[in-house]
Length: 195
Image 1 (cartoon, one colour):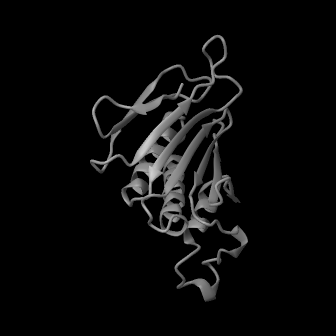
Image 2 (cartoon, rainbow, N blue to C red):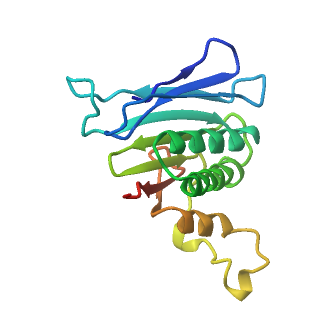
């Protein structure tokens, strides 16, 4: 069962993650932060049945990131490690990592407008059939249909739209909502592949 908690030494977060119901081994993930100051704060909830197995509720890991450039790489690294622990292939780990990178980059740059006092909320939900990822900022939000398609001739040299295009291409499900705080909330999911 996932356990994301601050490690004993400053600047590290560790996780014991095993979201697949058939998996019985534990994977320990430890990674150092890229800054001496705290960039994120980890929270978790445990949902197990009376026998200690995985319940029908998802395993949920919540992380609050500061709006600093280093948070983008940190979020990507965490997502790749969680995807590996969840049993995703290397290709899918890369896709998940890149989608999280793009989403947190957008929250950093467009949503929170580089304002460090604003936070980026990153949530991983590990269901039996898929991993759901939520990225919420504290900006003003946006409408997905207003994002220009970078494949159109008139938008080829534009500065926006490529991240949304990549997230849609790499994830099985993708949507953008207005978060409870008023900012944008990107919700994306990757389904486990059947062998």
